[in-house]
Structures are given as structure tokens and as C-alpha cells.
Amino acid sequence: MFLSKYIINSITEFILLDKPLLGLNFDGFRCSSYQNRSVTPDSPTNYIDDSFRVFSDVGINCIRIPIHWESYEKNPAEFNDEIDNISVNANRYNIFCIYDNHQWECSSYLGYGIGFPNSLLLPEFHKDNPEKTSLDPPSYEDLENFWNNWWDRKLKTDDGKDGWEKQLEYLEQVVRRVKDKKSTFGFEILNEPQVFRQGDFKLVGNYHGYILER
Image 1 (cartoon, rainbow, N blue to C red):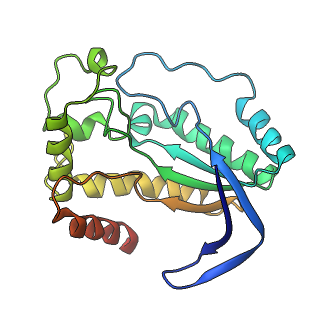
Image 2: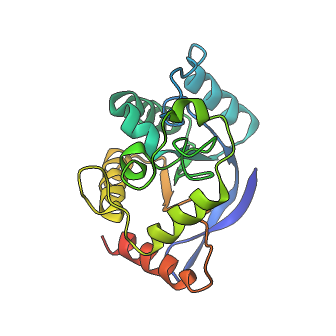
């Protein structure tokens, strides 16, 4: 849960809100579907509508929504339908949304994490049965290899496209879907990126600059 009395409108400008933001994380089902697990549980009937009604009733006025690139690649139509459902209900109940480009432990291709899609992992990592290992902890070596190559901008998708550029294409389609909704409060470029080399902190800045410039 989080509480805030202001928002940052730019690098240097703060805007006071009429009332504090009281918020929490809210996970969808299709926006958080593991690409390397064969079954995604069905959400309860009216899960999103009922959740937002409860949020409104108890004074929750902002939610952070983790969305996952691998979930989008698994089923774009279901992913987008859920995003639309969330934004429509957020408008209805006057709740702000922060869309979080989420990753945790990189990807279900490497272990029990979620985030980056198979198309980015396949050229660099070779797993005989990623569905079987998607419940196991990812190895330190795999995580280090992934993040070092990500910051060096060496990772390409299985169709030969630059990883940063391909992720930006994904993010842009999410932004286009929700940017004109009154409930859209902002976007998180990447949740909890990992750094294994001290010098990569500058490269993290380069990455964020690349996304923001577009």
C-alpha cells in the first residue's frame, strides 16, 4: 500500500493533490499470465468490476497494475481485453492507475520469475523444458548473464530485433490503449531492474533515457 500527497509532473515540478492518494497493487489474471505455464487460472466472475467497487467504497483512489511483457506475448488479445476492462472500471469508479512494466526474477523461461518474454530469451538461453523449470529458482548465472547483456544492449529477439526496441514497441501499444483515459495516472518503465556490475548504473540511465525520448 502507498500514500502520497503530491505527484511529480516533471523532473523538478511537484503538484499538490486535492486529497492524498491511498493505493495498492492490483494484479489482473491475463496481464500476469506466466508464458511458460500451460494453465492460467480463470478470474472470478466480475473480478475487476467488484474489486474496483470495493476499492472505491473503502477510499482507495490509486492502484498500481503490474503488467508483463511475457503475458502480452503469450496472448495479446486477452492481455489487451483485461487492460481495457481495468481502465474502463477505473474511469467508472474514479480511481487512478499506474501501469507498471513489471519483472520479477526476469522471466518464467529462466525459472519461477515473470516478466521478459520467450522471444527475447530463446536466442541466448537454451532450456529443454522451460515449462517444467518454471517452478524452480532461476540460477544466479542466468540472471547475471541476462542483465549484463540487457544493459550492454546485446540481446535480440528471435526475429533479430533489438531487445530495447522490441520492448518499446510493446510499451507503446499499452500507452496508446490507455493514455486518453481519465484514470491513467502514469507508467513505470521497468520494475526492479537488477545490476551486477557497478558501471551498469550509468547504462540503466541510458536505458531509461532511451525509453523516455521516444
